[in-house]
Every structure is written in structure tokens, then in C-alpha cells.
Image 1 (cartoon, rainbow, N blue to C red):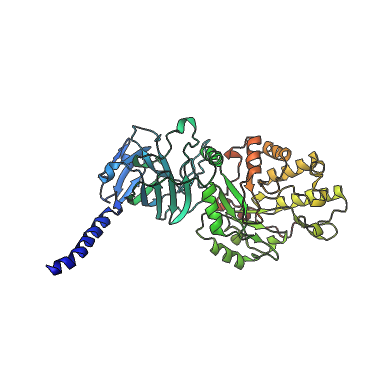
Image 2: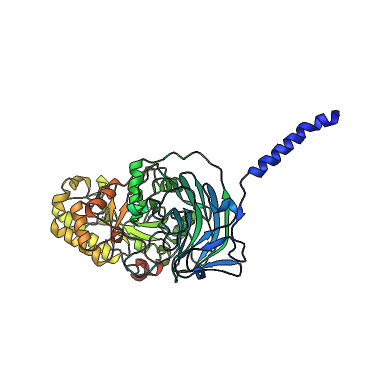
Length: 492
């Protein structure tokens, strides 16, 4: 009896342990690898088939709903992870908190996008890449390649959703109490509902070989990390398919790539991070370029190259330059007619002996650079040194503006709308738009604070810019350095 009294507390503890263990959320595989048991298509069932243990999605538009036993097919808080592979030019997605409907795009719930290279001829250009919460928080950079299995996972807790691709966070969205939604998209909010796989079209082909779900308990809502005003502004752009990208970010002033990525998911702005590449800079040849690229491998960013000075064309091979997603340069470093190498942002190195002659030489140098150097974007545009900056509108005459815009248009170089310098002027930007020049947003930060690109938003509204007006990185084979090559000698 005494022995039983001693053992009794241990027995009770053991039962409590077993009870708690049973309540711990567990992963459940929703696809058995054999057939579509537990799944049902709303239309065109031939769009979903199982081949060699893999769920193949290919055919007319349709949605395959989970109808199995887990939570009776209705999910509120949960985690999902799927192993996915795409064929080139394919589109799909995983929809959650939705409901069954007979046909067409699902009206309720959120879609986590699957798109690594999708393009179709026609008026609409789909920019949203894998990992996007479609139209809510868009990802515009590629994280994975076609033909490779990758893990797409996301976690939904009350008013938040975190999306990861191969373990890297690309979206962390918190929905406000009264989120902005267009009239026809009011049902795109967190709730409870079904899961569905999307078959987008007959040319798209996507594979799933595992789809696991772990239900989660009820929880407290997440507090907003941004203002309601900011959330509305960003979400409106996401619904417009507008690429909210700051292509001009540097890791300087204490800013780390981890901080930049965290700021990206907080604000909903994609970032292009660029090292300074040129004479007497950290990246100054193919070897240091390759070393830098290793440091940003697999990061959720665009990889840009700032081509510094005019000497950069002699320091790197075309193959090395083409490793970047895009290349940009400015007209702030050049050698004048007296042989003086100028850096216009440094007071002691900006030589303005005669204002009109300086401006003529500046415009000529910009024309030389943009017509010969293989770059995608012209940044810090129309910048003038402090000694003449107050005369910006006077010195940038119509004739000079026309020359500047023409060299951009003739050479398919995008024009940066710079948030830090608030350049170019609205007048110049309007002329560039009329000429068909593409635009990019850029900060050119000096410290860890990347700001909120207010000038870019202001110009976007004033000029009525749409996604069709904005620069996006080109396909590898279309990169200027591979098409145009590097000039034989320094341009300026």
C-alpha cells in the first residue's frame, strides 16, 4: 500500500503528460500519393490527375477542394507545407479560407501564388511571383526555378499570414480590422474555410507530391506594425499589380541584409540591394563580384549592381555583370574637359567654372554614358552639385530635357524616381512618360533607415503611373550587357 502511495503521483503525472501530448497539433498529409481521395474538383476534373505518386495540375481552369476528414475540411488557424514543382510558363496557387463555387476564379479567401516564370501574350502582364498573397502582398522577385522541387509553406493565425519559400520568409502580412478592398474583392479576408488547389490554364503544368496541414488553436490577433493609412496605400497598389519595389538600396550605415528583408515584409516593399562596383570600391573585379554574390545567395531580394564611375566597363566581364538582376548607373562621376575627375555630390570635387558650359558638358556626358554603357536604370537623375542646385529649373532647359529624355528612350534605359533627392522634377518626368520611358523607384539610402519613398508615391499619383509604366528586370538573355556588350573604352 505504501508503495502504491509513492507511485500514485508519478502515475497521475504520466497521464497528464499523455493527455497534453495528444492535444499537441500534428502534421497530417492530405494527399495519399495514389489517388484523389479526399479531394473534389468544382469543374473540369480532368485538370487534376495522379501520375507516379505525384498530383499533376494541368488543364482548363478548375479548383480542387480538400474534402477529407481533417477538421471536416474547414480550417481557421493552421500551417500548411507543400512540395511543389513548376514547368516553365506555369501558374497555380493554393487558396485558403475559401468556399466551394461552381466555376471560375474563387471569390472568397486568399491565394498563395505559385508562379516562377509565367507569361502570356495579351494586355495583362502577371508580375506576382511564388509566395505572394495574391493582390494583398505581392512578391516580384524569383525565389526558385522551374523544374526544381521546392517547399512552399505558410502559417495562418487569426489576422496574419506568414509565407516561406524553401524556409525563407517572403511575406508576413497582418490584416487590419477594416482592410482596404476593391468593391469586387470584399471577401478576400481572413475567416474560416476550405483549402483548394488552382488549375490556372491549359498551358500551365504544376506538380504537388506532398500537401501537409497542421491545425492550430485559437489565438490573439496580431497588432498592426504599420498604420492603417500605410496598409491601405500598399494594398491598393498590390491589387493594381503595381510593382512596389525600391531598386536602389545599399547595405551601408549599419543596414544589414536581415534588417532590409525584415523591413520589406513589414512595409510590403520589395528591395533591390546593390553593392557599389567600380574603381576603388569594395567590388572591383570579377573575383570580388563573385564573393559578394555568395553573400546574397537565396536572399528574398532583387540583386542589383551599381556601376560606379566610368571605369567600371574595364573592370568586369559581361558574364560576371550578367549575374545581377539589373545594372544601374548615374551621371555623377565623370572627367571634365580639363581632365578633372568629378564626383558631383562632393563639394570639393564639383568644378563649375561656367554654369552653362557645365550643364552642356553634363548633358553630353549623360548622353555618352547611356548610349554606350549597358545599363538598365539611370539613377540619381538630373542631380546638380550644391553650388548650382538652387537653379535646377533654370538650368534644366527644355532643350536639355529633350536631349536627356531622348537618350533614355532611344536606349531603353529606365528613369529612377529618386526618393532621397526628390528627382527628377515633375516636368521632366512628364516628358519622359510621354516619350514612353519606363520608371523605377529608388532611395539611395545613406543609413539604415530606408524611409517610405514618399516622393515616388507622390509622382505615381500625379502622373497616373500604372504597372505598365514601370521597369522590371529583363530575362537573362535580354540583359543589356549580353545584348549590347561593354564599350571598348571609358565613356566619360
